[in-house]
Length: 192
Image 1 (spheres, rainbow, N blue to C red):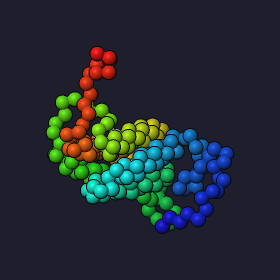
Image 2: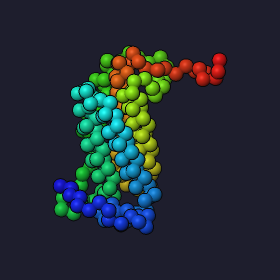
Image 3: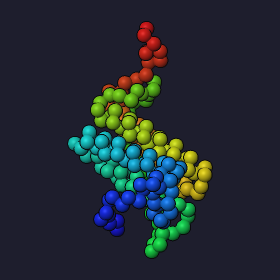
């Protein structure tokens, strides 16, 4: 179990931080960038949950996803394929990705097909879901960069890719199952 007694350690005052295995890295290292991007996405989900508090199904999905993102951060925090001292390391699993796929399919079954791209707009909840989606995409890009440089659990990238899809479909659900979607009008901003 995690126990945090001291928050201000001063350990990062020189621009470095520690991973779960004790390794020190610069705060702008690709692994730390990926961990930070996942944290940003999770914080955006927290704001989204303020909009979905009265929607039991959506809020329960988002609560599970927030916990998944902590699992994902723990996975990123332990480099390599080694085991943690004193036990097995926490990893994102194919089952977590499958659950996202199942939720996407269930939500998407309620939606009309799209005939244009959707602008990140609509209801406050849908707009918050779109913001979270863009931050999940950033986390995915950071994870892809990391995976190109060193060993990474492939489920990390897969999970983040599914998450952004999930948040897109959820945004449409939060827009009255697509009724409140704001569609892109090509050339519509050209002052015509």
